[in-house]
Amino acid sequence: MTPATNAESTPWKVKPNAAVVLKWASLAIFSLALLLRVMALVLTPTGPDGLARSEQFPDQREYLALGRSVYQSHALTFVDPRFNQPTVAFRMPVYPAMIAALQGKARAVQWMQAVFGALTVFGVMALAKRVGGHRLVPVIAGVLAAINPLSIAAGVLILTETLTAFVLVWVLVGLTSQGTKARWAAVFTASGLALVSPQWAAFGFVATVLAARLWPVRPRVRLAAVAVSLLTTVMVLVPWAARNRILLGEWLPLTTAGGQTLLDGFGPQADGSSNLGPVIDAMPQLGALGELERHHLLTAEAVDEIRAHPLRLPLLAAAKVARTFSPLPLSAGTRGAATDGKLNLASLAMGVICGTTLFLAGTTVLTGGVSQKAGLVVVAALYVALVAAVSVGSMRYRAAIEPALAVPAGLAVLRLIPRRVT
Image (cartoon, rainbow, N blue to C red; front, top):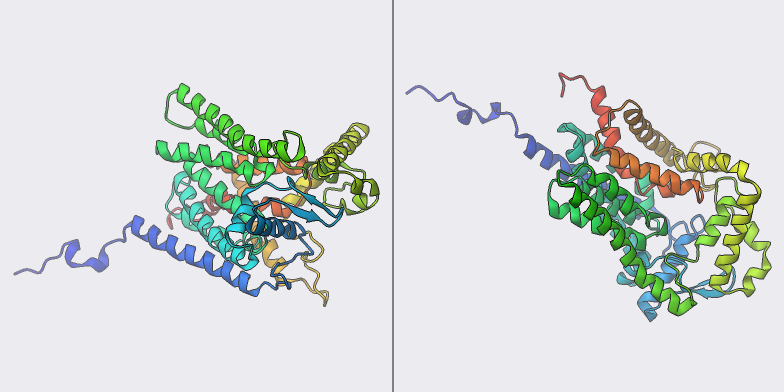
């Protein structure tokens, strides 16, 4: 009998199925992302209360205090040490609630964020698969997101950026999905970002408006999605505003930190960075005011400054956006100057990898290599730039979209690979 010579008798000659290869590549990249984030967690020094880098990012102490307060007394409050007064509406409630669910333990929060960070990378691959148009784009984008130093560093900080990045990526996955249920789930989930951080309150509506134009549905369904997005955003904020009405006497849909943020961005000291400390120290009358009155006074000061010096607004906006999208760390403790005067290797790695990702993503956008679906990532980046322009410039705010930027960067890398190889 003549030996069979078909493909079944010679399995070593059969080309591997692309779906199977992508599945195993996704698992390997997810594992790499998780490993890097766990290593960063283990290697990050912590203070006596288990809080990492508390001096560089004082917001961490506030979030941890709020989470512990929710866990211990079921009250969203902490004492602001600058005024020695309790605050009740200084931060949005979702992130402190998550900290409370972990009993207020900083290390537990960091472990949770390591998992969120790895799952975000998995979401990046899913998003790239939907918008890339080539089997290599999810792999390239996944690797770039997995090794991104800014995302890894954000995961060890007790801040909202890692959670926001996780939700944002999966919202974009849902909005670009072919499934009706996934799209509607994304619309509802995006509205919930308002309860994570006030600067993301409008993103769900903006993203839904743009994504609905791409859905293969009737115009009235698109209009309904936009209306539902707006209504859902309002609905998630109404209970929070009602709670603030009871505690503070005013319907406050966001937070009392808004006045400080506005003055930080437009006060007489404003240079694009967050440097409000000396201004607060020079206003001793703030200590005699309540939380809400302080918010209104600082807001009024910022508005007066904007009206008095309108010509400096474009320069301030440019400085803030430049800081937000800087490849190198800008904080005094991490911008690269080590004690021996040599370049800090972590800062160098961040500059190379983050800078490359930004450059590749920007190249893809400027050369028209972004599809309409991938354009939602660009919209998210523009949204962050706009938020920075009206507040302050900081790389930590970019950390929320840094993983998603790996998608257009992956498209740019693919264009550099010879076609015969792909």
